[in-house]
Figure (tube, rainbow, N blue to C red):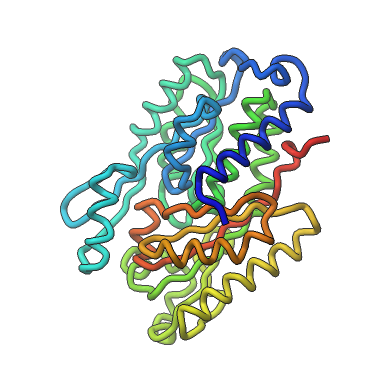
Amino acid sequence: MADLAEWQSAMLTHIRQVRSTQSGWVRLGLPPSRKGRTAIVTDSSASIPAELLAHPLAKGLRQVPMPVMVGEQIHAEGTAELMRELPLALAAGTAVKTSRPSPGSFSAVYQELAESGFEQIISIHISGQLSGTVEAARLAGRDALIPVTVVDSHLSGFALGTVVLDAVISAGFGMAPEQLLEDVDEATQEAGVFFTVPNLDQLRRGGRIGTLAGLLGTLLHVKPVLTLDNGIVSLVDRPRTSARATERLVELTQEFVSGSEGRGERIAVHGFGNEPAAHELAGRLQSLSAMPVPVIRLPAVLAAHLGLGALGVTLNPVAPAQRPH
């Protein structure tokens, strides 16, 4: 288990190791000119912590906030007011809704990147089965000043975030857009997401339960363990206690790692309103991970649908392009 600072330190050490295998400006630690480089755009469901967004390595990264409505008040992801109000609203049963970012939000980001000297953009987003964000990005990309390629990741949470960070690092090392897109496609297919929720109320209200709709009556008194299957929320198991649901998360992680052909998996844990349980789960999974296991609070846009007490695990293989040779 690691806190976010430990995970970030390990990530920076890893990047320095990779850089030492490169040549030219990369090896010297000098950033290339932004001209000719690829920028990466994502949305706030990617759960990329503010500390990383503010880091110099993230100069070519933008995370577009997704709106969250608590009662009648609309908030942007990441505000202190939202993170204060959301747990109270969920506990009280106050209506909480989410929305895709507007095409105009993406247009503004794409324009800013073009004016900063980037020559192309890869925009990687939450599963189109869960949100209209991909479509909003595509609408904005049609009129952008520079080429924009929009990718439906079929993921969410830090599984998406890790794919995005890998792309940012590779773009910073000067990787060609074609290779970047190939790596992103492979990474999204190889990632895994498992999670459990105290109940399905929030997912049901938000219409995000996919193939579970016909099972609602049979899941009232269980702690469902879920996954994203091709971007759709799908049922894995239906344990009756929270302890057993957490145990299933450990078992599923073990199975995923054992089936990954020794490539190494980077694991992260999500929680919301249950920090001790999230840290305990991270500690149990540390021996399975190729890097420290961070505990990352669910962003509001995901917590709004999963509810208080949600617990999740994301798995991403170590990126081939970033393995020292």
